[in-house]
Length: 399
Image (cartoon, rainbow, N blue to C red; front, side, top):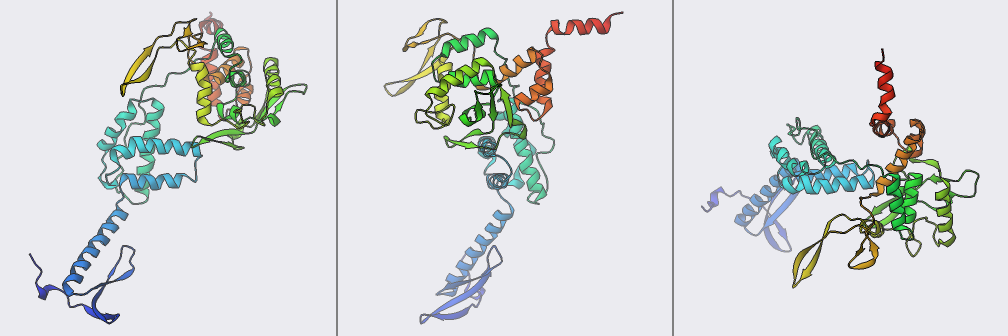
């Protein structure tokens, strides 16, 4: 229905460049007075109505952010508190498990059931993924409640545990260590693996290691852990900020590693112990290619994809131990087990415990901040075998 002329306010007028305009003033979303102009009262009336509608919407949007908007704000706040790698992990999980299913909803609309449904995909992943996503939900909605963005927190009462328990990697046996080193002798990952197995450094500590922290010509050769490697957009970043204060340590190294590093140093053109062909620290993609030398030598069944006439066709390969790969005669399937970079470190710690090194010394050499981490490994390694428990049980139960 057309607005009757008598219902339209009698706006004031103003002369601009010799032309008469009708004018009114309204408050914008920030409370600032702004002028609106039009040639006719009817035009100004419609312009005023639309401007007020936009102001109301802006105020509502400001006071009622969507899940995507508030999550982005929360993440920005965290950027000043957490390490870049942690922030990237949060950002990825927020995008995939929170913003993707709930991002368009207003924070005030989200119910406990919405969160439970959003957690279903995360529950099919590892318990670590589930627990992190659950934590992010709670942090975001608790923050919103504290800031009076929402009155009711729908994340309260959501189970803190779930997901598929992550399968713990076992330490490599002595035979597996020998198989691994024999398989990659002379190949790019060899020196990385040696440092992991015989010094127990974390991946980021190995990739950030420089020769000025490797002391080979002293009575007790050792590695000083002082730097760490990070990957930012696939570019290596070396920092002197380690994972925890306990990570700064001096690790004595055995003769086999001394000889390995001495041989490597003689031909090195880099300040870094592990470097690319130009002497620069490895990018993340370069490290993946280096580790692939190990992965392709296992006899684990795997599937490749080939494009045939524009179609993606799966191609399953079942390697036979001891045989050469059909596509590369230099690749021999010589490993009947999987290996991860962290497994090298776990093997180092396990071997220390097996030979009777006390837990506090193990904690120092491993660079563990929390003794609970060391003791958990210690207990699993030393006290999960009957032969280790037999004497204790017999002594405790003897009459």
